[in-house]
Structures are given as structure tokens and as C-alpha cells.
Image (tube, rainbow, N blue to C red; front, top):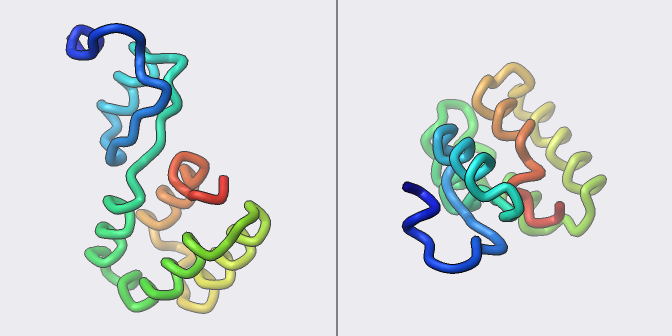
Length: 105
């Protein structure tokens, strides 16, 4: 049904939130479509998560200000360490899928 909703060729790229069911459907039905996660949804969730909102400004600068993967990883690690967020489950999971959302990747 998902493919039927899109006439013609599959899209070259699709942007969604991090819904696992949607991600799986895109992978299965649109294997050549480039799938990215919406940065707005990610940033919006950061402000809702306990313990992370305090470093929102730093995270935004990291996300939008780093041109290279290495720069992003180094600055991100610094923010996580300086704010004691090494064991934050949600942040760890979103960081693990950063290749799907970070502009510099």
C-alpha cells in the first residue's frame, strides 16, 4: 500500500521522523530511496528529554556548525562528556543513527 500512494518512480530521497515501522517500510519498499531523519523532529525531542535540554544550544551549534564528520564526532563527544550524558539511553540511540540525520554526513 505504501508504494501505491506514490505514482511513477520512487522518490530519490525521503525525510521522516525516527518511527521504526516507517523506517522499515521505506527500507523494504523503496530500497534505492535515500532515507534521512528530520532534524526538526530530533531537535524538538532534545528539548523534551530530561538532562539534555540544558545543552540544547551547544548541540545545535555542533549539528549546524561542523562541516566534517570528525569535527562533529569530536564536538559531540565533548558535549556528552562535559554534561555527564554518557549513559543517557535516548541520546546514545540517536547518536548511533547520526549518519541518517547529521547534515555533515
